[in-house]
Image (cartoon, rainbow, N blue to C red; front, side, top):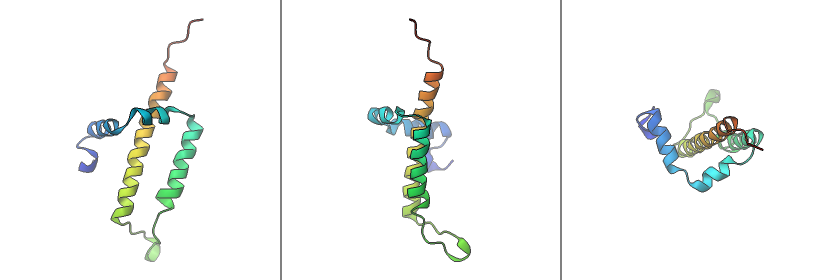
Length: 100
């Protein structure tokens, strides 16, 4: 793991959690898995693939620092969303049944 992400996976996760706001957690908790998949698809289509430069010889892409920085932000965003959404799914799955 690179130093940009923290010394360990645990530190990287702590850094991502520390940057989340309560408003983001609430927003990311809404919807269902199909909504989340569509959101991720759109991000990949419009950014990761949509912002690629023209390939050089033999179809090789040379990525500049601006592209790499932008996509690293998107990766952090998606990892943060995924963590919140996994927590939502697990909380729902293991919730105590309601008493009637």
